[in-house]
Image 1 (cartoon, rainbow, N blue to C red):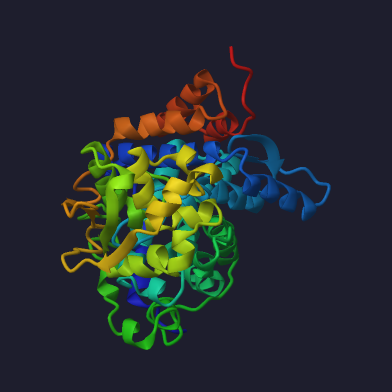
Image 2: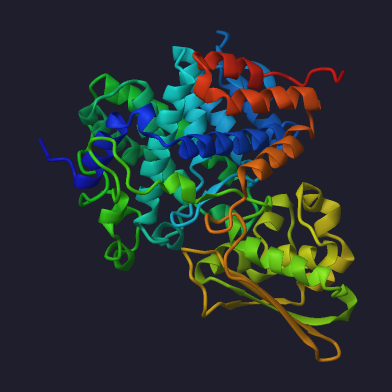
Length: 475
């Protein structure tokens, strides 16, 4: 038998060995807030067209047998893997969920949907769900960070690729797979991992599919591994493994495979918690535009008037160009909400005009407004020579007024970064804002309290019952 590659073997041993009591209280608390943030994003999606389409599609492909797994924000019971798929799509649907900065990856929205449905089915304790979540996030963050942005450059969405491995490890942990079986689960994930960035070209909805697809594939991989499926033992460093097959040859040579296991011990020990480096989003936009948006808002607050602006130069990391700056015409004229989410031009224009950028600013009337269109035409990007990406997602806006005055604002460290975090109280406020779009405050508060009290929950099915309901009549 082929010897397992050191990445797969170390990650498997770590995930199998991590114990609830080994997780520091502040890490457990942050984990629950990251879960709360993702669940709030899912609740805000309840009436989105893609959510209705997903429900109809699942119904079309389901037989008459009733499912038992729940969908967040819906009184709907479907199959286990369908629920993982649907919940992942809901959590990621607004692009408002968290990001591990160095890995450029959304992990909660792949890992949590995998665990929620499975834990409820198995009557797992909240402490075990938290442990599996933390283990999978720690593994997934490192797997993604090792490629140093190479997946994006090759046209792959890291969430759609690495999410499969993280979800497989998460499900395997709850299924009580030993380290040998967890190596096979990762090998199976290598054959399902996918996720194209082609949606960037035309604002397509397929990005929303990626974390949910990873979640249901992770469940499948773990189940197959539990029942003896033999899989490749070198899914990362093998001749056709992740770090060669998914990267351009020149980028494959830059991979630091040691980063994929750095700080993790076979005994479940951790010297650095990557979960604490995960950034909560202050804007429902691609993370690459956040710093520039805050810079534009700062200039708005200094009294800059849109009709006084001649040109706008925006400095961004090189890695941002392909996602939020090009194709230039599409970024100047968003055709739909998803186009707007990945438009540097719109993010900066909106910040300058409104001094804010929330869900309301992603309605069609906002990004087709003549004032916004005129300002988008004045935005031109430049690669930031001072960028510290991937450590920070920096951004700078320089506005030249018609009278020749130049005003500038730089955000060297993006808001939400571990060095400038969105704190737990702010996460709770964001959750309530998202949840109360469609649910009464009393119901939202009960959901919030249930998630934050997950460490004391003896059976996760109780949490699922609270989350997976229609809005209650507002008292």
